[in-house]
Image (tube, rainbow, N blue to C red; front, side, top):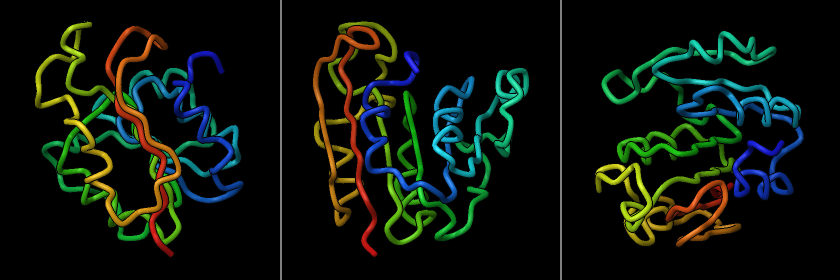
Length: 167
């Protein structure tokens, strides 16, 4: 599990033993596999799912979609867990809130303002502002939150949240 982002790995203690999870912008599926290994039913979505298909993510539902231009394909109160890593598209904040079941959890770990000093992404459109995840999920129970410089997985400025939707 060395390729799992440390923040995501730290959330393991709060995750349910069963349920339906969404890995948004799943990439090659490292976090999809993490969620599957925990026993969750996983939907992995990305604009390019070729790497997911190549690895044969056994048990995951793989959905190819450009969620930045297409309609959000998920139902209201559809997921127990939504995981997002290294990705930011602000219109998804409200969609994720709606798609979570009561008591559902958000795990989000991505780049923040200040990361431009360490490389990509450097465009402010793809960097969280200070406290932005706290604002986006206001009203949720915050289980853990961090922002600032990290060395792992590489030197960068990140913002991360683990939170639960009210019952």
